[in-house]
Image (tube, rainbow, N blue to C red):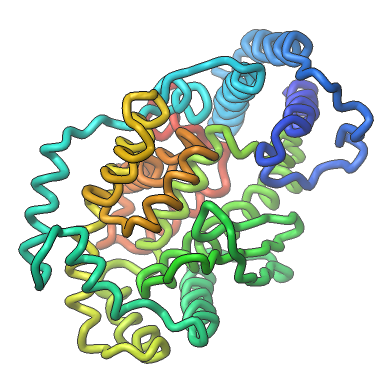
Length: 410
């Protein structure tokens, strides 16, 4: 396993030479990185494909059934990561996959398909809560305009949200004493927030300020990118699997891999683990709304509307699936995102840029969240059993799980 793991890391780093977004983090041996001079002008498909096929075959000869569970999880995780590398090599060579085929190959999961009628019913429910006239999308945009965080207050609001997420996380998870992060505000990005994990328990968290940032995004981004989301996930994987167990495959994080479904899903679910239901509303009412200059009395109303809006998250998957499969034009996709995902036209255009760049990666947020939630709640980690939920959440972030494993599929 260790030999295969080392070869996998070096292979992932080689693939990363041909896609600058592929290697999201690496903190392994410096001399394992390929030199710039080793990059070939023509993508070496045959060479890379032969290497990954050999690694998959070698791993398949290892029977982990008599090993401890953590070793079986490691074997399964590495197998799925290698399948994803194989898929990425195929795509970089010019190969084509449908949206669902791509998500299965890269992320070990396929998102459910929802009809237009499904989203229309949710729009009717949301529309009954919104004042004014016009489409639901227009009315929601008008309503939410009064909840845009002023730019001169954004840093204070965001840092207060991070501090609360960190405090609550430390109450349940022991983090390395040296863990830390910095926050940067950036522009001209296709995403709203990003965690660049640098190793040694340190992250750079970037927040994109191209478009207005609504009050709910403060907690969402703080918990998703920071505590108990990506920052905590990455440092626990580094600490428990790479540094303590010396499992070298966890020195590299290929973005387009099953690891991302676990990472994004746990980061999204981590929001409600840290600040569940009424506790989040109370924190927003008492701390964030005043810091942003909003009337705290409106927090309950805002999150009542927000709770219905989040049910429409899967609408973005339908836009991505149909656009990338060539069934919808750019205009049709933007129109769908405005109508059913309830984006402003500007935000819908930004989202389409994200879809063009990251493709089927979009399933990792909503499907990943649902899979992580189901995995933890089936084991008793419900909101009513907070201590167990935190315990199971930490275990998930500290063990080599794959999406198939979350579903109970070997």
